[in-house]
Length: 334
Image (cartoon, rainbow, N blue to C red):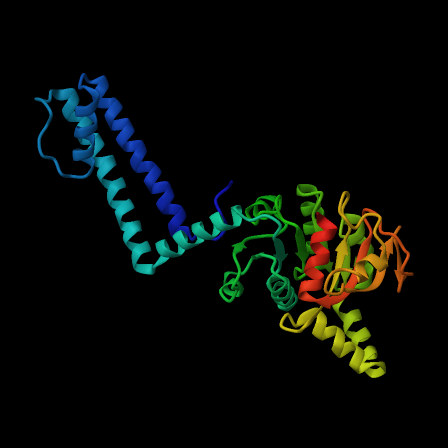
């Protein structure tokens, strides 16, 4: 994994300086060994020289040892002092604690599976993350702006979401969902194309700013394309015609503390629902969830007859209590 994007210039310089210190110590040790000093004494002499401790020489030095020690001191002391200065700056600025916190966050992201990756922490990204998290799915956010990410309550990576390495840092290979909602359609299309390449099984949702961009998203690999302007217009029209219906759908879809839930449930191969019927679902212990529609063979069947059997790959659109929906989820997957 490449160095993560959120590191400050001082942190990068500190990393280079630490490598330089190690290189000086290794070179000094090798030099003294070549001059005939055993390995432990060579390392001791190098460390005491570059740190300016200088207790004593491990043996009487001749001309070659003295010249080598002077060169080592000039190079090594400057390198060590520069490294200590950078560490002090980082401590005073509080950047070390920030970096350690981000590394812990990166470890948490690396351990995730089945999470959602949100590309773009704008208004759409915030709303999507809030609803996805409310449904119980973990969320990782990618954005270029450290200032915007400062208000992000979810694990996040600062960087360009069109970059393969940044998507990998967000755990794209083990993610379940990707939401592409960058500032431009061109950027979001590229994210969709890249994410689909890295994870062919990903469910990809893209935000489209224009009607012309929607077919491009589909060709790039998006499973669903959302145009907020069109949805806003449709909602306005729906409120004008059936305001109570819209209010009810908002409650069951977006308010997690309500009694009812509206969900889609896919019937998996080998589950107990394969071959079962609508009547069997209604007869579940305690009363089954209400089946509103069935998606089978690429089309929706609303209010299907009670004798309709379910097959693997069918999707049930149901409404019910949390227990009813959870029971049906278990049967569809087991």
